[in-house]
Length: 233
Picture 1 (tube, rainbow, N blue to C red):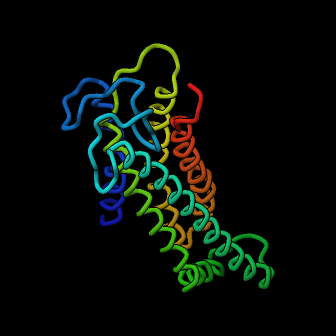
Picture 2 (picture 1 turned 180 degrees about the vertical axis):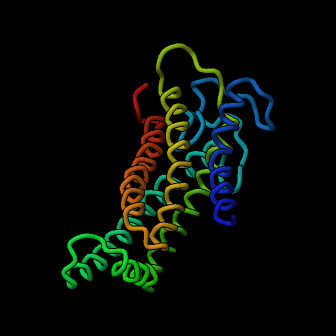
Picture 3 (picture 1 turned 180 degrees about the horizontal axis):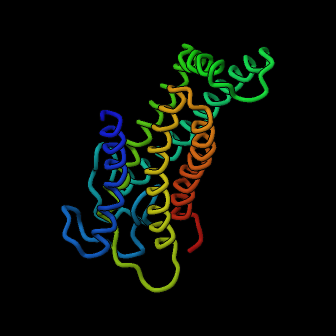
């Protein structure tokens, strides 16, 4: 029951930015400002404006736009770092477990022999340090991500016909926000499968988790880069 509550809580927190943006774009009243015009910074991940006209300081930054821009790049960078640490963690565990398998002459996963070794590798202090570093980077990245999404909704506005940087930027938000939800759920259940020694489930989730984990920061950083002042219209 506690695991289900935790998974539901994680999913709900990650869904908040998506629901807020969709509801606001649909005209549903929310306690955020109306969407701004398309030439203003669109929601999430490194958006910027040509000039900060009449801006006031916001959380120590010269303007809300600058905070939004910073939090977008920070979230993308931290999540990318979390992905790198997670990959090192996964590779290290797989290498140690497979070394044991090879030393025992085991060709395929044997639940009777390997489950104990998998749990032993999982509980290794070095692997736990990598795991919690991964979790810490994720938590920091998520904080900036949510802050970026919340500030971004105050800049959103109806978009004109045709494709534009702002429209791509906004659609990219829905893409990486959706991937974020999937990643959080997969990460939780892959850790649970690993702790239980469920090799097949863990392996399948690990591949999907790694692929989505790499895609998220790339989409975030790409969404920010397209709104950079130096990018073409």
